[in-house]
Structures are given as C-alpha cells and as structure tokens.
Length: 410
Image (cartoon, rainbow, N blue to C red; front, side, top):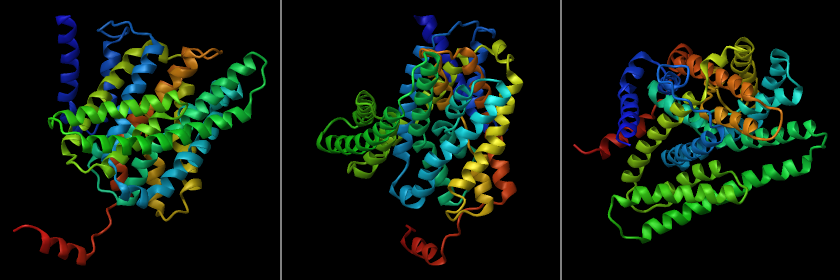
C-alpha cells in the first residue's frame, strides 16, 4: 500500500509541478498528462497493463461530472444572456453538421460501413469542456467577452447531443448487425429525455442544494465538500432517471452560484482544485488505456479524419450555425479553429467498444488519434491564432472606467 501511494502521489505531484513548464512552452497541459499516462502504460517504461474499458468509462464519467460542475460554478448569469443563443446553436446544429461531415469522410478514409462512419463522426463531434476551460485560461489571451463566453458555454452544453448521437448510432449499428430495424421514435424520445430531465434536474437540484447549504450551520471547511457531493447526487440521480447527468452537473454548478447566499469563495477554490485533480487523473488514465503500438494501424486514415474535422467540418458547422449571429469574420474563424477535442470523445469512443455489436478496440484507437492531434495542433496554437487574427477584448466605455475609478478605494 505504501509503495502504491508513493508512486501515485509522486506522479500526480510531478504532473502539477510541470504546469508552469507547460505554460512557458505553450504546450497543452492535458497533452502532457496524456503522454505521461502512455509513458507509464504497457508499451512504455512503466509497463502498467490497464485494459479495463468498462472501469475507465465509469471513472471517466465521474471525473467529467466534477469538471463540468466546477465549470458551471465559474460561469454566471451574464454568460447566458451574452452568449446563450450562439452557444446553443453550436451545441445542437453545429454538432449535427460536424458529425455528418466527419462521418462521411470517415466512411471514405477508413473504408467502413456508413453507419460506423457516422458513429465515429458523432463521437468526435462535441468540443470538450475540460480542454476548452483549461486551454483558454492557460493561453492567457484576451478575447471579446461574448466570444469567450460562447466558446466556454458551448463546450458545457454540447455533451447531451453528442451522447445522444453516439448511443443512438451504437444501437443502430448493433441493430443492423442483428437484422433488426432501428426504432427512430424511441431514439427521439431518448434525446428529449436526456435534454429535458437533465435541464430540469440540474436547475432544480442546484436550487435545492443552495437552499440546504444556506440553512445549515456547519464548520466552514465542510461546505465545499457538501457542494461537491450534492452535485454528484444530482449527476447520478438524473442519470438514473434517464437524463443527461453531465448537463445536470453543469447546470447545478451554475444555479448554485446564482442562488447561494453564503460566501462562495471556499466552494469555488475547493472545486477548482478538485477539477484540476480530476483532469490530471482522467488524462493519465486514458493514456494508460491506449496501446501506442496499436495506434499505428490505421494511423494515416485517422490523421485524415482529424484534418477533415478541424479544417472542413468545424468551420462549416460554425459558419452555418452562428455565422449570422453578430460575430465578425475573424471571430468566426477563431471559433472554427478552437474546436478542441479532449476527454469526452475518448470516453464516448469507449461506449461502442463495451456495447454489444461489431465495434472493436480499433475504433477507440482512431478516436484517440483524432483527439491527440486536436490537442496538439489546436491546443498549441490558440494564443498564436488569436494574435494573428488581432482579436482584442471590447474597449471599456470611458464613463464606466470613470465610475469604477471614483468607487475604487484609495
């Protein structure tokens, strides 16, 4: 036990210690965590054999729920007023367009049946909240607030659509394999349940959690833990009812911050720290799960799919869904480029592998390559892209500056 604790703690401690180095080098920190996991895996010097896809999916889902809850806590009402319409359009119409174009390209490049190709497109269609939250903050770029809000809010809202498409197409692939006609009506009901129950459960759960925390008088250090465990109750409860637990976790964090009357600083700090820990553990685990030597089989077709996703599918989806919503041409180009893929697509790729049907581990490997390319190319170039496009925050009105100066302490 002591040896296990020593090595696990050392790996996580060392990973956090490398964050300043990653920031100076401009490298995506999550990519470094992924590489450390691969280094410790069966093909690396660590030699750790980990191939339990079911356990990885369960643990990854919990970590993602924590990350989304923390992301909701960091948001506020202004983000929905400012960027609710474009973020929702990107999270629905944008995801559908991205999945369709990438899926068609996958059919050609990977020579797979069209349903399997569309399943791959659906798996990588959503941007990743953990990667987007982290890399936008890490890059240190100053963006116009509406543009930044749209990016962050989209990444928190598009998971239900991606999950619906992945689960639906996984069912259809298995149905075709068994010569059973897919029930499109039941799939539509599934989508409504995921979004509806997730929306209602997240908002009501967040309100109830805020009410409980306001009524209880406990040691100050216990409120952050209660908020996190309460969020996990909401996540799991909504999932058991057939809704999107991920959407509920994000909305619970958002609602808690809006409704809580107690000082929220301790809760924010605690959940930010736990969010970082979950991101580190999640990407280390995914790095352990993959077998690097197996990635070379079908590597070039997977690279082609990544290129189509980044250079064709995402830009078309952005211009079609929000190109007419008041963003400038440069901002639309930036939105097109910062479509970061991260843990969510890799987790979704596990689902078809562990489900009955013809999908093998090779499917997971292709998605892993696409995500690694996205994190490397797009994650490394966020700041240079913003500078190249000349994106700057909106200038603060002179009257507002004067008012702030008069109200500020001497």
